[in-house]
Length: 257
Ligand code: BTN
Image (cartoon, rainbow, N blue to C red; front, top):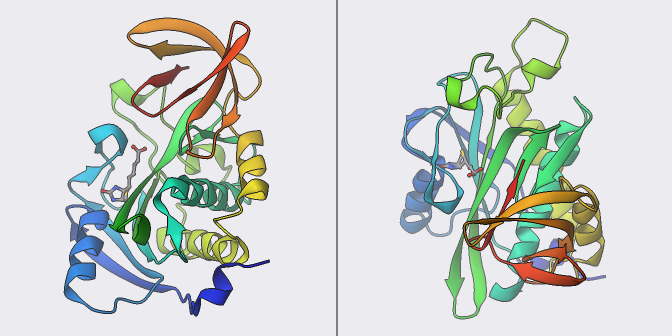
């Protein structure tokens, strides 16, 4: 089987820890445009991210020194743009595998939010640089709540952290968490062929929050009931509504939980 180890890839963790940046994704993007070639696996972690970005143009707010914020660089091996979602699948799985060393009940909320039970513990923002119809490089940004105990009122019922699920009163070492998580993701990346994602897509589908269970969604500002079946090759969410299945992209549907 062809996989990313045959791409001439020498993926090594090269973690740079910075005191404060606006956004680790933006910082890595700047490095990528200034340093040629920038090694695959270069990772930027910061203790204080002041202007973090999330999906759908949202802000990613995180308390300084309490949580994990990291971005790393990949050069996927001849990955066509239409298969780019497979990288989201792979990274979500890697984060899931790492978190399940600590806790159970971890799910992926489509497309790539990380949940524990019904609460969000982390999120992923992947930004691809394209050459024609191919993905030339990918900046993978991950935010995971690690030691945060108090959340603002608006997030109290919807957000959680790793520490809230552990018995110990001691804080976790965020840099060590980061290294372990990156090792897990890089191992999976080296083993996988993103152009033949059947195995990782099946694993991802099985871990989707509310997979196979009736759930409420918002579509066109209306609430509808449906059941998640999986994702298609473009990464769209496949939902059974009544008797028929429909595929939705990120802008078209929201799971209400
Ligand atoms: C989301 O759930 O909306 C995605 C959140 C992604 C946040 C991470 S934190 C590290 C990296 N830098 C950013 O500005 N965003 C990502």
